[in-house]
Length: 289
Image (cartoon, rainbow, N blue to C red; front, side):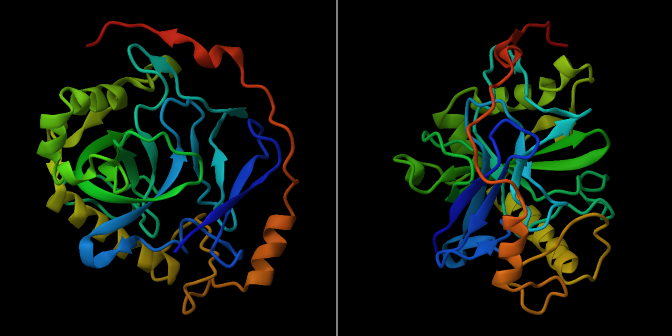
């Protein structure tokens, strides 16, 4: 199964969107219509890449928009860019989400004691390739980190692209610790401090910031998939979440391809990118706590 994207409006603008299409060219939702599994028998998952490694623009699946295109997060009316906190430059992995998952804020996680963050579950791809926005890649799950972000459970699933030249060497979280020394520690450091330049405190973690293994991570993913099923079938209240989809036929939010096309055509056509603010490349230094 292959997917493609269509860019609308100008990159680096408030209106910019990346819409997804299936192999037939029909518009789909990356949240609801891309399967969670790429190969269930072998435990291979799909990952939607929102933020390529080394970049700063905080792109995300727009959970409240029809068809859930990727857009840039906005804070106080301005596009959001993640700061470079020394020694990091932008995101240190390809960052994205597993489709057909949802961290339900009303569901108290038995492991953390907090509700979810109201988004698809987050993924960090540690492979060597720098992906593109909107890529859909097949990944092996290796483990997970439980971030507690402003009182919400925000799982970070650690994966590797199955097409990575070294993918066969990675089968669990200890393989990352052994083959990429200090990478997991750097991941904790990144998540702990990335909001500090915005005037916020350091983030906290469950399990004393220890990574859980592959089996634990897969159970977390399955739980968020069950929450997504309840959401898309309207068996739970999703609030402002938009569940418009083109593949879940028994969902009350199902729409036909022509209806999906109308949604996309109502957005501005693609244009030349707007400039990125110069302060995005600034590097922040501060003493670790």
